[in-house]
Every structure is written in C-alpha cells, then in structure tokens.
Image (cartoon, rainbow, N blue to C red):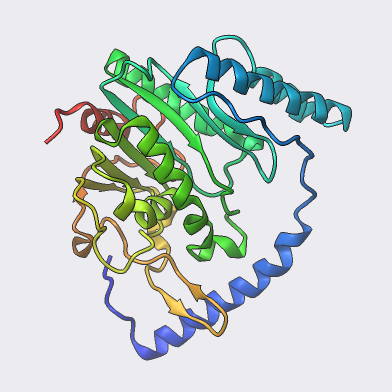
Length: 304
C-alpha cells in the first residue's frame, strides 16, 4: 500500500471522514457501560518465582470476591478460572479494564520468550482470545520457548475515538519497556497484533536489544518512518484481513492528531515481510495457520 500523500480532494474527503468518526466515537464511548469494581492489587515479590505467582493469585481471588459481592457472576467465574492451580501470572490488576501477564512454559529457564502484545477490544472480559493464541503458540514452539500474554495497558475499543490515535499506545510504552527489561531483552521477541503494533512501534526505541519485533494485522506503526531499533523488524498481514483498508496517514486536527502512521508491510517501513496466509484479522494464531508456523520459526531462530 502506498504511503504517498493522497490527492488534495481525496485528502479533504479522508480528513472529513476521520474527523466525523472521532466526533461520533466520542459520543458513543461514554455510553458503553460502567466499570466493574476491583480492588487495588498488592505489590508482588520480584523475580520469576513461584512465590510471585502465588501472590498474584491472591490478587485475582480478591478481585473475584469483590466481583461476586457486586453480583458480577460472570466476571467472578472468569476470575476463579484465572486463579486455578497451574496458571501463572506475573501481575494482575482488575481495575480500569484489567491488566495481566500470564506465563505459558518455563519462563525462568527459557532461552527464547515470545511476548504477545494485543490490540483493541482486549480486556479481562475478552481475555480468552488472547489466551487461546498464547496456548497455540506455546504448542507450536514446544519446549524451545516460553510465551507471555501481556495485557499491560488499557486497550482502545475498535469503535472508539482512542483507536484512531496513538494515545493509548503512548500510555502503554513505559510498562512494556519495563517488562521487557525484567525478562531480559536479548531473549524476547515481541509479537504485536493490530493496535498492539502501534504500542510496539512507539516503544521500539527504548526496548534495548530485543531479539525480534513482529508486527501483524497492524493498522500502522505509530511512526512516519522505519522503527528506531537495532532489532530485526518483521511484518505480516493475512490476505483476508480487513485492516488492509485502513488509511495509513497522520492528520493534524485542531485538538489532536489522528491516524496510526506507516503501513508496516509497505517497502518504506523497512520491515522484513513474511507470509501470513489467507486468514482474517483474528486468525493469525489459529492452530495450524501459516502465520503461526512462520512466527514460531522466527522466535526459535538463533539470534543474530
């Protein structure tokens, strides 16, 4: 997809459509429902230890009790499942849409770690989709690597105003950089889906020497040029992914900048483009998919 400036008339029409979308979303979003109450979490022990997993489990159970006390039976049931023995979380916070980082595999001993950075409409209420992708990737990798499902920021809604800007991504940057430092950058491959690619693009310059940055199903990189990183940057998009129709522009409106920047599968991004098959926007980590096989090979490859 070309990243050249559109014709002036087309640019005006695009600007009007985007501005209208922002105004409409700003009206719709406040009507979307109230926040589920949850307690503030305790500070867990440091390190990748069983003591830390046990402490975070107590935070999940505290949130489960509060949800049950407020009549949120579905939320309480989901949290009980998250606290089941054998599941391991590095952090959890049930407030403001929810934050968590679940571990799959031997994180402490793994030479390779794949960190999944999700996109819009991902929260504790929809967490099953992220977890399913992490499980599929872990099965594909086997014992060669660990996988972390990192829900470390308040993701935008697909139909909300926030998804049209880099604001939520910028809020996520400090947490992602800190998390990567804790895991050890040299063994981490970031797998950034949809709006998560904007998060990774905005964070790239401060991620240290990560092994790989993979952007897939991305509406943009949040930047106007190649990512400022020494890590290999990879990009993929399924032929059935509607995200290909998103305009790759950055427009300065009176009160904000709208648009998510460069298309990562375009030649000007400098990314290494690889095949993702014919799946749609939610199909990348589906068991048996071409993308899943290819991204597992990227994560497992010897470091440069």
